[in-house]
Image 1 (cartoon, rainbow, N blue to C red):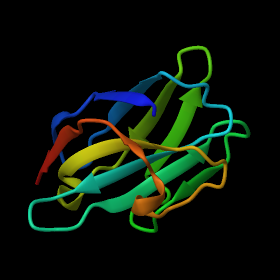
Image 2 (image 1 turned 45 degrees about the horizontal axis):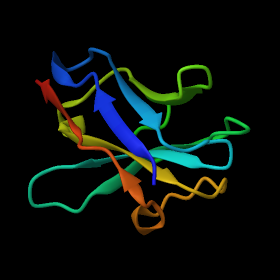
Image 3 (image 1 turned 135 degrees about the horizontal axis):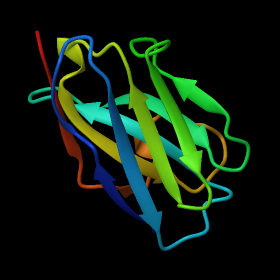
Length: 124
């Protein structure tokens, strides 16, 4: 499995931006898909974005398309989630995840390594 550590969460106002980071270790990621998911109390964890490590192909949930950007830094073994134009409904714990197949899956059950999560709170 891959070890994942998220950082960058915080409290911001609606319209602000945040960048989340996910540092990965323990595996070569070239054949991996990396994903971001989020969860609010009482709700199921939901897909936000994914990127295939080798090609950098990015995928987004409709709710964040045009506002969020997922990217990766090969040298730092780190995945980022740039979040712009944040809305109160983006408030959640954000989780980084890794899937050992380069298919850009959006299914939570396809990911077998997870970080501890980082809280993002957007006030109105």
